Image (cartoon, rainbow, N blue to C red):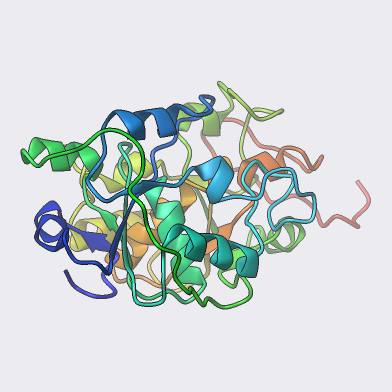
Length: 297
């Protein structure tokens, strides 16, 4: 398994599965179905994997001071989160591989968090648990294996992020990619946030476009071509957004694989923007940048 690679193949993971420094994370989670990811883990998972839940472990819900609040998945305090992950068994010498069953967008949230805080050897399992079982590799059921606590030292602040007011000031001068599906982007449906639509100037870039027919990430050259068509050619700042700062991490992963500069993540994403009273656009076009907040209407 290559250190610092953002992607791990099924064959690479299978070959390293007995390594005591390997730490496998099942990150399955389903929108609007609390506890369903944990239930899926208990039914079957890769041996040695633990389960980390997006709501309970990869966000700080209910904290109005958390970065990205009042969005649905604000980031936890880095120091507290490092202590929590160390208590679960992730250490400074660990090699972390995360997987899910939805193309990698939930696993990419863990990848992004560790990567942003300076952890070097974390990756996403290409194709997730579906690729693992399709290869005839074994799974187990039941509770998590015992993992001894380890010391995990991470940097003490999030860096590759932008908050709502700073984003608003940038609109029209940066490329904002919205990772949600097209119906939500256009405002035709909105299952969870208060207002349907998208942030003005955002370009729709559903994460499914990063995947091939087999559910794996496309080759680097294909990913690069996709992002260049969207306007992310490496010449200007790119900000990624989604519903709550989770699936947007998949674009960060894909752009890293494509050899493009890392984008900035709007952690609060549409769940934060739609609760702010700021303008919202609908339809298939990005729309015009809103006037500065202090400009009379």
